[in-house]
Image 1 (cartoon, rainbow, N blue to C red):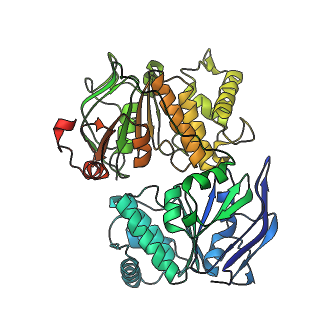
Image 2: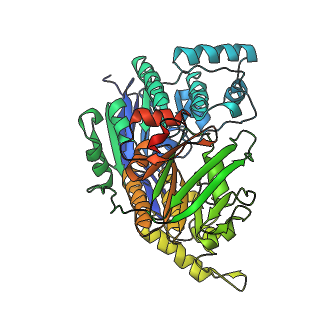
Image 3: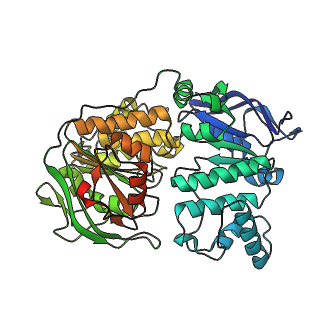
Length: 505
């Protein structure tokens, strides 16, 4: 453990208007599980892209196993023994597990041999997979197994994992951690990126903390509190979301027996969904990824229309209405997939602000976009929600994931919604940004809006929700008061026990 596996010395990478990494030095030892922490925009993504050969540093030096290391592309990184599991899966739904794994290999073996190797490796590391199953039929946790097994087949010396638990159930997280500890015991080093600091404390033995592209601290997470690490990341004290809770007002959103087929080939259809949301309340909806969250948001936003008599906004039957008509009334939504759904990555922040803000912010004049007003609206979102970007004309795709998330959520909140539906509101954002987003959701509820927060982060939902419901295979459980719910009760609800103890509802 005394010899370095990977050493970075003075790694620097700059882009127009921003220095992503500034003189970064760090060491990762064989078998070490090393956390890389920092706020959104701190430079974590750029640093791991440099290690994996996706970007070339402007200055600095890397050594791997004592030899100079400067991969010019991911193929070179993999050949040197570096593998990476990305936050966003790169799998084809219509292909089998084995076919997807083969696509990620430079020289795949014969299909039967590959299938046998997938079974062997997946079972050895506690991640059992059927190589002949279609990926579109897998859960989010099983899809992640495919990505991990694909990496393990390369026998990596360093495995980089970016937000690996964001789509996993608590049980799947426990299985993943067992796998990572086994790899560590065998000498594989793991560079672990996550905003879930309690997970970092449970898993990692060392941490490097970045702020504004520079290394500002190192620590042993096992001996450092989550709050202390968060404050190292932000360079100050951490805000804890809070609000004055009052009795909720009148029902503003009502769904009565909504069933709808998913528009996606491997999606989850909604089945007899019923709910009421009142002004001033936050309804939290939990569920494992792939249980109908995207379909529920689409049904509420107007991307999926419904027959008359099923979805009501106050006295308006909005089921047949599209998104613009619902937005005009005050029913706004922010989907989970920020790059390509909530925002167009190739368009500027001004243009993205206009995409959803033109109706309620009056950004058009005689059918033409008022560029001045649109630019002003984008600037307001950037300033209010501390979006780290060179300016309003920056392409959305150039922002870090967390900064784009702040922009997407802020864009909707500044339009003064009567009802706001959000899916994964703090997915992939740091502790400080997550606290700010949660506080903003609580603030609009306190002002009388209704919030429907769909999330896989149960801690988040318990922190902000007045009532909690669970989605399982497209069915929504009856909402229950969030206060006092136990982990066991939540687990039963997530598992589909929708009729449990109705007296509590």
